Amino acid sequence: MTKAQTAEPITETVYTRAPYWNDIPDEKWMDWRWQMSNRLNTADELAKVINLTDSERKALTSKGLFRVDITPYFASLMDPDDPNCPVRRQIIPTEKEMVPFESMMEDSLAEDKHSPVPGLVHRYPDRVLMLVTTQCASYCRYCTRSRIVGDPTQTFSRQEFDAQIEYIENTPQIRDVLLSGGDPMVLAPKLLEMILSRLRAIPHVEIIRIGSRVPVFLPMRVTQEFADMVGKYHPFWLNIHVNHPKEITPELAAAADRLTRAGVPLGNQSVLLAGVNDSVTIQRKLVHELVKIRVRPYYLYQCDLVEGAGHLRTSVSKGIEIMEGLRGHTSGYAVPQYVIDAPGGGGKIPVAPNYVLSQGPDKIILRNFEGFITTYTEPEDYDPHAIKAQESLIAPRSEPGQEGLTGLLSGKKMFIEPEGFGDVHARGGAEHRLRSGELKQKWQPLGVGSIEQPQLEEPKEE
Image (cartoon, rainbow, N blue to C red):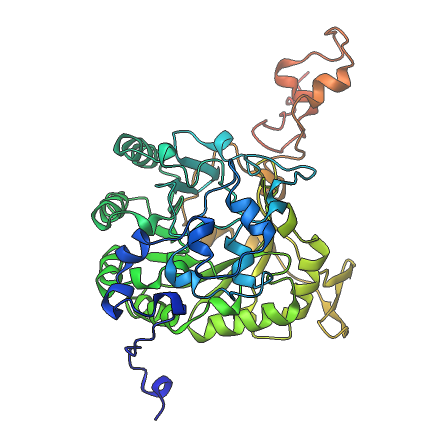
């Protein structure tokens, strides 16, 4: 029987390394602390592993660019002679990083604007992003948090962890906490476990997640001890970050195997990058290789409008083309969701090909990935109110101020106004009797929302 058929743990050790490190003993090479302390960050160090171009050398010797640090393991995946190597393009700066582009921003996702306490981002109603470090094992050239990531003076203190956790404790609508940074898996093991244990002790926190590229940059960090530790805090989920099939090595496969055997569901978040993975063929190969190591493709991100990443951005139409080449052409669980993380802080917005061609009162017209067009007949006797009795048995979660379109669909509101909408259309005119009225109830639809429908007076007897 094959190894896959026996379902035995992956125990065979493979040492992916460039010739420069051939003399390093295996036990040292597989020590994640050794990898961290021997990262490459200068032109002279990198020149021992790859043949630098003039553009790469100029960027590496320039001041003010985003931090460079590359683990020896991940550096070994680069093609030393090809500056267009998909691994190399992700982590080696070029002088193109110095070229500004339209709409580039320091904090393109407006995370700081949605931060009630330092390091905590509360953008969605029921979940928060908890930034626990500004350090990573290696640094991606398109990092959305390059404004703080990589800077050791910007890292978070115990007092800030306390403030973050206190906010979560005092906000019962939060059911899901995502740890990110930087990369939480570079924290000292005891510190990371302290954070996990404190979060798990909060009754209303249902799910704990970590977003990490350490399994990709530094798979030797995922020891059996680490897998056993996170397994104590279930339900616990982990999203990794693989952009190209070349990054899926035997070491990453073994790390994923240890985690899944500890009961940790794994997802993958990729970023669509020019010259790296902006191809249907490469993306299809990537998702197939991911599911083979039991990692579910989760998100494919459009590259953010972050400083220094202009040369790595693709058009949105390229992303839609890739999704057209995945949906129907491979298994549904191998298809990620293509999203744009909205500039200005709107959160993740799904973008997909249009499969709904038309809708009528009793039919919807659809097309599939092949161009086959079909109709789906709507039911004539569907009663959406029939579920109300069951629905009433589930207590609704409080999501103050963030009902959005759901509020319109549920009948709580009839419209959403932009800020200052009423003032703009008043044209600066004074208040008068036709525009007056307590709480402006005349513009609140009768029977919708919190305004009660007026009751008609009973006719008086003569």
